Image (cartoon, rainbow, N blue to C red; front, side, top):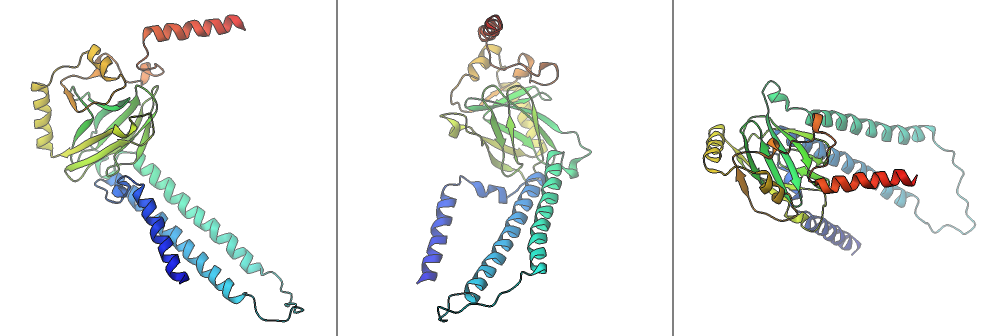
Length: 303
């Protein structure tokens, strides 16, 4: 009966955990080298932790059985036993070794996924600026001179460098099957390097809560063959409208939008916060800047 309740409790616990996850198992279905590295690291860590739990449960069961209460006299006193020096050394050294192994694996993995994929080290990456606003994603292709909203197309078997920043609160850019996640912030540019080896459609999302329509900040990542990608770029240049500054100002206002495509980028009139542009708050109007300046002056006068 106890075994039955134990198995039922495990079943319901797993059901609750998995029901609260939105496609979280996509990380175990990698389609690129960076995602494969992360997936292997997660699996390795799970196996190590499962091994530790197995040893702990075996020792726990052994102690319960060996030192369980017996029917000895109430006046019985067990013999005095000294501590074991070797046991104390063992249970101190083993956790230290586990921490060292996990630390080495984590540091090596972090270094590997932060840089360009090893197999593409000598290739020029496709640079895409991925900027967020409430509640949408803007993808600017400076090399091609085009821009998309809420979807991004990339060629297969070519390194891609996403340069991330935000026109509002901090967000987190994540394509589970292609790479890990990284924050996009308003006053600096962060980078994610990846490559996709299998054409297909992969979900991307914001994994950092940023307001009421946070759930709508998903985008499609379409991995295309080089030929199809070049054809798509040419079609956009020929058929899509240009992006004006006034229209872009409307786009970054808080709203939920579908897909949009343009034959120019907002980088021409609203550069990314890198280099000489770093430190500027995106989306702030002149009035807000003046107001902030006067507030600072009033505070200085008060002092």
